[in-house]
Image: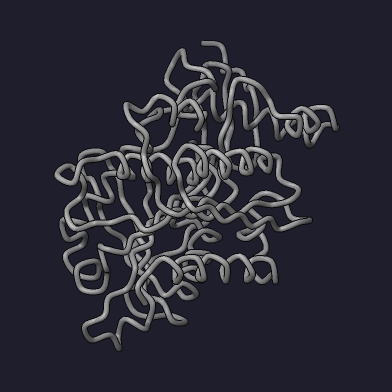
Length: 325
């Protein structure tokens, strides 16, 4: 048998021309059910049949709560739908900081990955996590400390795309179909990963700027090729938020949205485009934050930076403004 031909390769992922992938093992951090530096964490099973797991993060303030409960923050990691995990060291460390700063009970979802499981599997898995929480979650922390009436959906990069789709699903459901007692109070999309059949001017300029920028544009195109259903292109509602919102049987009134972007990110124009769509097509109250001079995923890659702390502060302010505390 002839060896498989590599189409594109990076540190974390090798993609072959036949559409299969190899993922390089990444350093992982173990959960700690006992509090470490203000946060405890533990691993949970969300959907045994589909192999969907997650990790909960509980701030130490829970130890002093009496009748008050904390907002629930559902977290969806990035990675182009093809890579990533909540237990990877950088992601775990960021989740620790996010939990501590926002004073929320965080439910980080390890959804199934593409191309083995193509869209909408990731959207379905993260929707399942809402039903799981509404039914009691882990049977301990979620029921004891989480306020189902104040839920927030947070996603980074492709996770931001997931947050949009799950948020719109919930908004369009009848009261009987929604996860019982659960209400989504806001969406936080951090450098969201959207697309369309045509490239933006920003994306075109990246493709012309040289090897590194052109390679990044190729990766983004390849992630969509690997994650969309066979035969679909970037005009798909799973990729294009305008096509998605236009395909709904009836308009939705979306929750408030915070879109945070990076000034040097290839996805900057897409994020600004989405913010306007959320205003016009979802009737959402939208806030936009652009961190100039920063690139994609800066908040994870620079864990001690002022910019990361500024982002956490803005997210915390947004959550507080939409919750009862």
